[in-house]
Length: 235
Image (tube, rainbow, N blue to C red; front, top):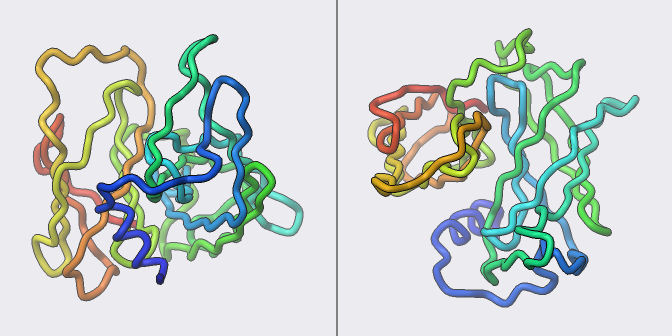
């Protein structure tokens, strides 16, 4: 299956698929990975990248801070998510889906230039090349707390929002609403939801069909706390 094929299939997958070495239990069960396939997208105006790996949709790995090696390669180590509690194992769904992990970038990376990324997760190593975005300057501030989005590959993009880490918006619908426009609708949150009072980046993946070209596409965010917010999809 092509990368576009597995991305689209993963976004629509409803049936459980057996997954060997499901990641992340407090019992210390190690993740087992035979082949690590990795993709990436620029987000937060080049301050971060979203790394996309394949596995349980409810147990996305977390990342240590990226390190820029002397050869210009960004080295990232992924870890299993922390346990829910001291004596509680994290239950991972046995599906197979693309998951996004945010990685903060060290100084010295120019998002207008191509970036080679090497990812280590458990005993596996994967590599990907992230194309630079012409005209995108290296940011001079930590973040502006604004939503952002970036293409992972054709038809698949990562979207980052800021807010409570325990109340991340849920993608409900994605449509190509014009030749150079994608409308993403978040689900209406429960009226009684309780959110932690932190401010954190939340990342989601979304797939869209019907675009002739990915260049210059604008994303319109609707639903949850958004009403017609427009942002470019980088890449």
